[in-house]
Image (cartoon, rainbow, N blue to C red):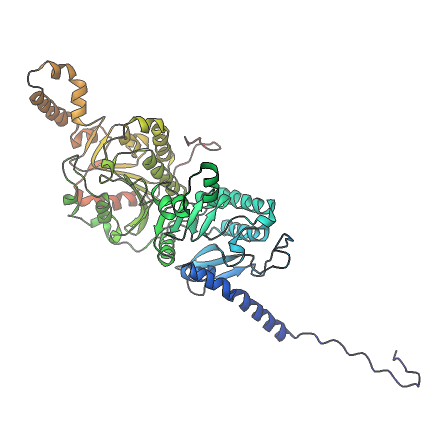
Length: 534
């Protein structure tokens, strides 16, 4: 029906409000997207002034160019806490999504310090939960870039609940996908548990800080004033606590190392480690190996030089280089296949095992076993470090952690006794008795309960005390004991060493042994889980 005016004239219809076209709507979204991605100029300037890159700049360094797909770009908090009700920036201080590294899929989150100081609230945590769940369901590595002031105080228990959700997911994902944490700024309070739960933690000198309680709290409780770096800087965690897997000088080198590490890791526990083309290692003789290791049992040398000779291109990724230096843990390739290498380091404490070295090696062995990475153990160990302090701080328990890790490992395992292996440390360093698949030994190796000098002092104490010339008698007895019980063939004749090899053939022997063991399958015992001596 047409409406009529009083004079009978038709009334014109009311104008229909204009609606945005699809093109206009798209242009509005693009403008908003560009504004969000571009960030706030002042916040970016402050970040650069602190000698730190922005979250998006870091992702550009980490991921293949153009590969990043962001999720929940428009997410905002819904809190009405002080300073939040009228301040609801998109992303809520964390950028989440997926990209590739050398063409391989990873999931990432990068905390944005320019928004709320990267503090974690309900929406912020929910975004991290989402990418963690996606990483697990797609079987992809997870990388977290940490740069945060901690829990968002205005959101109270919701922030704490968000952290709890992160930790629960990390534990559930442990041994399922590789988890890498990169600390590029502050990481304080409960947030510090996330790097501790990760498989690998990277830190940057001078800018990275990680601690449970800050300097102000420490001073209030103890009266001792300490700086942020002294309390939880990269050097502290790289050299003392052992939390930092790798410490780098700047963000560029740090993220480059993360990319290198990812190239050595399988995507998940069901996947095979990435393989490169073989380099004929099975026929590769390395003559320099015969010169690196001195024949004298107490003369030091660098086990890294041995490692460089047996792995492809002399290239390896060493974990915890600055902590527990008496043992080396590294990922490398032999004939194109990824291996985990554990080796005693005679340059530090003569290569003895102590508490930190045992814990360092144990965690590495467990990681390699969880992700199907074969283990090579280079042995040159005089024993466990003796002393009252070692016993009181639990060296028995800590050594048992390494023992437990090797005993339950089901991946291919090859032991190489480079020079000497004494006492319980011989057993712990992946001996045949605890399940090593192959044991190889160099011709000069010595395997015994203890060194010849110590054994003679115990066995012939009375004879040495009664003789007029104990020095001469001791020398004769040491030579006799060494000839009878510590020669290279002694263990081989009893089936505890598979082969006594020329040092120059070590690389080729390992390549052949790994090829032989490639199809190894072992069913674990039926149980919920073992009780590691933590």
